[in-house]
Amino acid sequence: MFWNKEENFMQHSSVRMLLKPLVCGAALLGLSACSTEPKNIWGLPGDQHKISVKQKPEQLALALAPNMAGLTEAQKRTLQGYAAAYLNHGYGPLAISIPQGSDTSNAGRRAAKQTQKVLQESGIDWAVIAQGNYQADGTNSSPLLLSFTRYVAHAEGCDGHWRNLVTNPGNNESDNFGCALAISTAAMIANPYDLVRPTTTDPASTARRQTIMDKYIAGEVTSADRTSDEKGTVSDAVN
Image (cartoon, rainbow, N blue to C red; front, side, top):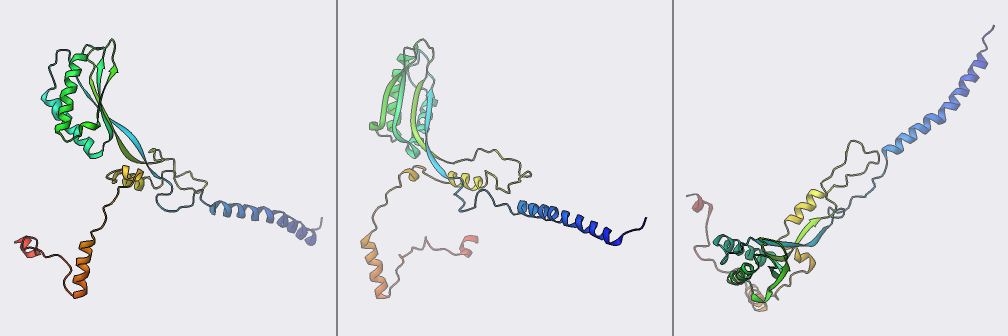
């Protein structure tokens, strides 16, 4: 049997022609996998996790006993702290709820009067204090309840769950990407209600502005005079 060089060459050429599209297709598939576009195009840090504001009830329960003559000193101090919290970030009425139909109903009415007095002495206007009853039929030792509304800021979509970043065939960023920044920003907002309704600003002092302009035109120093107590140097501080 004689070896046919021409026939062998043709067979190898045919195999190469068949394999070439497969190799090219595999190469293109690999390239397309590496160049997959992210699902979410990154923008500003706050685009993915918005900071929103929601209402949160701030509640306080004061324990009562049927034979209580009034609030204890510890309860009065607790009320003073509660009043300070309302003055700092409370909105709307401050509700006092007395148990009705309980063995502590009479004690609750006495405690409510003292509570209202402590709140007013702490700086809360009597007009925002609302008093009412809540049904406590058939219960014992029902407490005196207080409640007001505050606003809190939080980052949307930050549930603390992180998916496995090793398996990421879509080349997408994590759903929690940017949560650290959003949560930190929300925690730094002193009054979240400002995001609901911005605080109004007082008008500028035109008289003070004119005084500065007159000094500037006359070539005088525009800054305010400082006393000797307000002046200091590094050498004074370390001596």
